[in-house]
Amino acid sequence: MAVVGHSELMSFADAMDEISLNIQTVLTHYDQHSTDLHASGGLTGAGGTANLTTSGEILQAQQRIQQRFQALNDLVRQAAHGYTNTDQNNAQQIQAVAGNLRYH
Picture 1 (tube, helix red, strand yellow):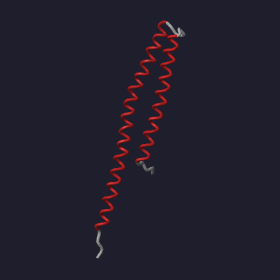
Picture 2: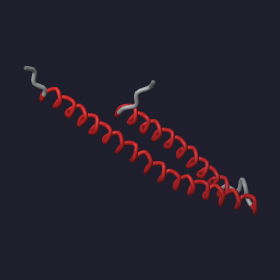
Picture 3: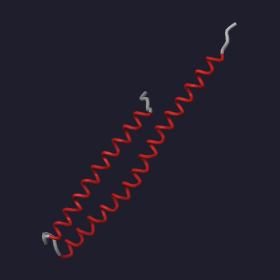
């Protein structure tokens, strides 16, 4: 059975941040390419306008998802710290039991 502790939760949150950053980078490049293509006249008319509008909407949707994603990662990090505190408190309580035992 896998053990999940502070370091595993923090690694998970860091990996999710990296994935999110990669997605944001790709979509930002896509939006910039669509803007450049439209500005250069490479894609004009209704199709060009629709492409430009759609790429902007996709980028905005991703930014909203990213905000929620970041909030989730913040919760994971908080949980990791809480887990560590709880584990340390439990260890202290268990040690206190042994310290209070007296053998006659």
